[in-house]
Image 1 (cartoon, rainbow, N blue to C red):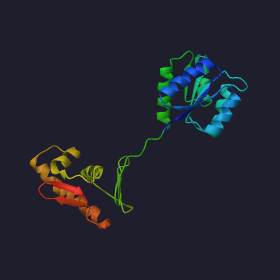
Image 2: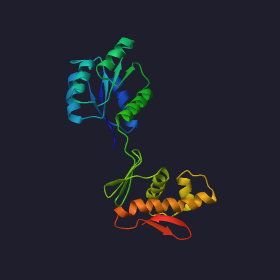
Image 3: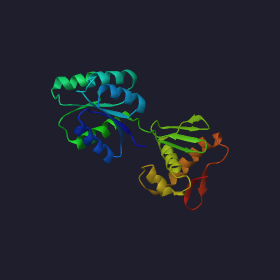
Image 4: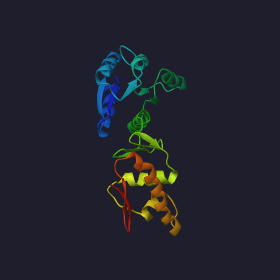
Length: 222
């Protein structure tokens, strides 16, 4: 889904330039020319990010930022001709996430928008699920039928490989590779041992025997 940007800029030439680059990057956008319009549009459109000029008619950008911060933590990038360090520090102190000085390269502004949005967006949890098995790759946890189970590092990686493509049959060599275990005849045979232990932990909590042996080849989920 496209992110929506609120551009608060009274200089029509600069506003048009920013909007041109936003359109090129496939962002939706709204434009406010005054501080009062900015507050009204912010409440109406609920943007994902605000590009905010400091020098504005009616209400200046600092006051707009403070009003936004009173009701939202949406990212704000301040844009200003005031380039002294004291002005930048003041911008950060009232809640700006970034500060860019005029004149600026619009490509740099686009890069900063992407960086700020990336920081503001929580990363999606990496989850794998199959039937009653739920695996959280970031938390390194596994639940079966709602019950947490404890797996060794190798068992966890084996289950991760199997869950990543449940319809596929994995050879013992492929499972070794997925577990980052160096190949040897003994390590290939050890896969059977780890699968046995994994079954012992999973199957009592499931109605079906989930890990199937494909004779002469390897294993898959059913």
